Length: 327
Image (cartoon, rainbow, N blue to C red; front, side, top):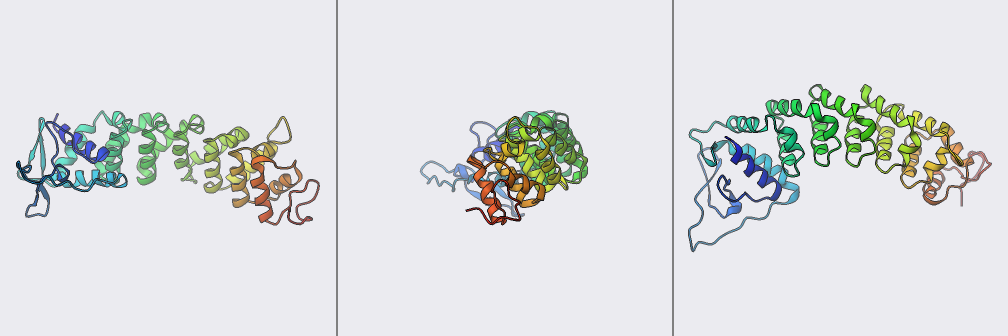
């Protein structure tokens, strides 16, 4: 189809820094070609060096700049025209519009497939970075029905996060709603928890409050979980009144031994949540429960240290304001 050769070349440039082999390859500097500039300053590929000429290799593309390379490939390819399996110079060129049309035609009906691909999702992110309204509208319309699933996908989550973070809230509301609808499952997923955190970066929305409510329903399990604890921390930092609600939930939560707060404070991941609560909203009730509770062992030593820095003691049976710092 028209535009397929250009997309293959752009994907290859973006994923490996080198163009693909065979018909339809997009020639560039890394193929040891001479580059000349036309009257408008655009770079056009000359013929490959003949036999006997030195084969000069360009510097390899750094991993951090591959996304910029993809953007540059899209932006500077307005002098190309796709014809079947050949990429030939267009005459006369129409800046950007031809590339935009080719990409839109190629993306239509295939966005989800590309988003879930290890290499192609980077090109999709590069398209998002261009901020082109037509292409963004196409991406958002096709991502929306699968937003909840893509938010937990190893590659798709990056696209979802980038859309929510960089695009105007008025056009990403449907994506945010899709992530919010799936957030109970995404909280504990390796990749999905980061998508939920993006929702919490819009603290005034109803969706952020829904996430906090879900966290409080089983606060102990979420605080001690490797991935969900990240969401709890983000809520404490970003969502108004979340720290107070989470603190109250921890103090009131049932526990088989000692207290839920003690279990969280001495767990590998939960101790970070308690430290964040002490940093953001040092509630007197929380501090008193920690100071009067059982000795904090294991990972709880970090809480003990945090209390000392704040001027509170961890000696059981004493009021935190009546005791000196712990030794």
